[in-house]
Amino acid sequence: MASLVGSPARSRQSALLPFLFVVILVLSPFLVSAFDEARRIRLREEVRRMFYHAYENYMTYAFPHDELKPLTSTYTDSLSELGNLKLEHLPENYKGSALTLIESLSSLVILGNNTEFERGVLWLSENLTFDVDVRINLFECNIRVLGGLVSAHILATDSKSRLAPGIYKNQLLSLAADLGQRFLPAFDTPTGLPYAWINLKHGVVENETSETSTSGCGSLILEMGALSRLTGDSRYETAALRALRKLWSMRSSLDLPGTTLDVITGEWIVYSSGIGAGVDSFYEYLMKAYILFGSDEFWDMFHPAYIAVQKYFRHGPWYHEADMRTGKATYWQLTSLQAFWPGLQVLVGDIPAANSSHRQFFHIWDRFGVLPERYLLDHDALHPTEKYYPLRPEFAESTFYLYQGTKDPWYLEVGESIVRSLNYYTRVQAGFASIRDVTTMQLEDHQHSFFLSETCKYLYLLFDDSFLVNQNYIFTTEGHPIPIRSSWHERLPQTYIPNNWTSFKSENQANRQSAMQSRLCPATISGANTGISIESACHIPDLRANHRCITDEECGTDSTTCRQRTCSLAGYCGLWFRI
Ligand SMILES: *[C@@H]1O[C@H](CO)[C@@H](O)[C@H](O)[C@H]1NC(C)=O
Ligand SMILES: *[C@@H]1O[C@H](CO)[C@@H](O)[C@H](O)[C@H]1NC(C)=O
Ligand SMILES: *[C@@H]1O[C@H](CO)[C@@H](O)[C@H](O)[C@H]1NC(C)=O
Ligand SMILES: *[C@@H]1O[C@H](CO)[C@@H](O)[C@H](O)[C@H]1NC(C)=O
Ligand SMILES: *[C@@H]1O[C@H](CO)[C@@H](O)[C@H](O)[C@H]1NC(C)=O
Image: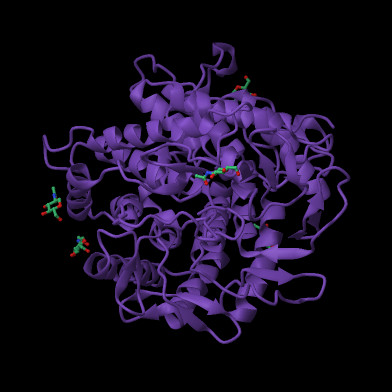
């Protein structure tokens, strides 16, 4: 889920990651044995039961309203409340948009429940409408609703056997396009940066606030870009890209963004920023857009932005906030949303750094039983008011990525302890409840939709990644999978493709591998009578298993860009430019 200041969500992630995986394949047979198969399956089934406990109670007590209140077995129409701290302009007759059902569709597919997926798709096709007089948060509605619909549309069409023949006629895509069009007036500002709020029926309301966050206008490109690619209507991608470019142009000389800004003047309001609330998915979407669309432009933004984070926010394994203008530390606080960062680092190929941060988060998780929303690193104490844990996914998400990246069974043990905690502290008779205070474990009457779209999904994928075996996906910040297709990528020059790619393929064929571990290259090889269809032609592994290096010659070729990887100042192979 994703992140607005104070809002319940944040997140992220996705698939591919070429760099390190090859090497890890070689190591994996030695590692897996420590966590036996029966235990893995038992945990997978436990996660399955968790999902259904959340889902069926939602369907019984809350559907078609937005979210379940599990302590009182009732519902809340929360779409209009998301990110709306003061709860202003709440509608009187909004009756919900089946938010939790929309968020559950891709999880149902991953769990293999095509029957229920079909039922949900048909219900939404006939009954969902966005012609409602409700003011929504663009960012939240984009990642949850638009992302949920776009992903479910792709899942509904990518397999002939998923739905009964003839019943799916792109209804979810039509709904997504309808929603996308309702988003467009928000972008009609002098800067192209979108308003944070829009009324679905009436557009931007009079006297609307012009303040928004970096993540609010910098994490739209995956959903809106995918919508454009699917519909052929370029307006969505163009609007999101224009906003992203503008946002990037506003970075400081240190390559740091702030946290909040004014969409009319294009000026920063809050200069302090970090990798948590209000910013997080901005970084995530630069990297994931690069993977999904294969355009160097995204990498050229992500790369300096990532370097700046490591330089100005990092303190050992922790990340604090800093002033974008000076790079001076402002707040020494750990937030639960930051726990997505190690997962993103796995995509970047920065495994050792991801591993060490993840361990620190686990340390805090272990101490409290779950992750508190905010922890004061300088006082080594909980934040006085933000002691809640709203079933957030980020730590489970990073655990999933690190397991994919390393196959170290230790991460399965971390997953087991997450499953145990969630069942012990948050499971109630009618669903899963958020924790209001991690010191007392007092519960709160709310089951967030991201518990179904992300928390359960990442835990399930941790214990069973068969969904990823034949296809690479990136996961949006709300956990919705979007397949990586070479047709969405810019074409690469032929010269990048080594002519011995077939031998490279057969070398590795023996190992069972998930698509996340496999090498994927945006260039599709039109196989000359070989019958082998392979998308990953240009990958050349780094010389050493741990990606350490002294010179560039020890680094291989990145399979996403087909570029020669270089040795960083810290001594790791990566897509670094010399700095
Ligand atoms: C699919 O979901 C429905 C509704 O929760 C459930 O009744 C059914 O048992 C599930 N089917 C499978 C195969 O898990
Ligand atoms: C649409 O909603 C109505 C009322 O809940 C329901 O009777 C109908 O079956 C729904 N349509 C589909 C296709 O599920
Ligand atoms: C908008 O602001 C103006 C000036 O402050 C005020 O007169 C007007 O009533 C406001 N409109 C609404 C709908 O609040
Ligand atoms: C992660 O860190 C731990 C503790 O420093 C170390 O034992 C382990 O090998 C590391 N794992 C990876 C994949 O780097
Ligand atoms: C492919 O060819 C290159 C250059 O001829 C060579 O360096 C490399 O080792 C070969 N790779 C494989 C997997 O055979």
